[in-house]
Amino acid sequence: MPGIDECLLEAMALPGARGASLVDWTSGLALGTAGDSPVGDHETTAAETAELARSAAEFDSFTAADGAPGAGPPVEDLIVTTRAGYHVLRFVETSFDSSVFLHLWLDRDSGNLALARLRLRDLAERLVLG
Image 1 (spheres, rainbow, N blue to C red):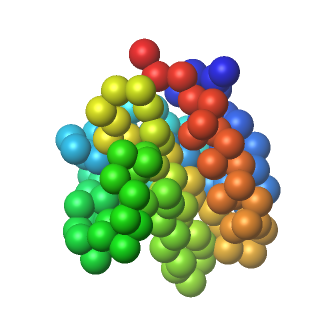
Image 2: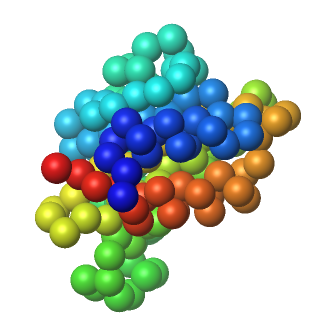
């Protein structure tokens, strides 16, 4: 079971990976980073992606349709597509009241979005926090 650093290194091994981080969406702080940041600063990227994650996790429009309270986070992942890449945010379910997600920034030309989603799901399930 990988810790934060090992998890981010595995994410960076994906084709087209440009940057990866583990972010606390409550505080907007990066708990770990690897690779590059789209804006050149991992803390800025963490704060900006945390706003997006918080919106998705808290707004009824995204959570009400799930209808299964207590079955884990209502939102599994978010994908933002830009002209140059993809941003995949995968929420991490933990045994404590978790508010963290994995953020992977992929190059649009060399990245594989489907593979990235599958691998981030696997990484989020195996990640050991503590």
